Length: 78
Image 1: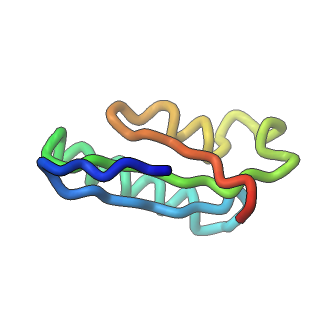
Image 2: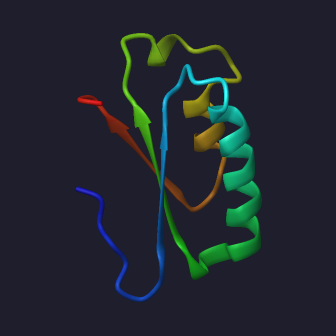
């Protein structure tokens, strides 16, 4: 369960690793998180697939891991 922060807004983003718009969405999330800093609690939920671990170096999971302050969750049930 994703915890809601009682002191600040919580932003949830849902992504599928093979959706062509997901990387652009992560780029926008990085920009937003950079501008908001710790004033927003940011969580990204990524659809877990059998191939998630086999993503190339530019994969969604890796892009999210490089963003400070963003908690990433895997959704195994979709």
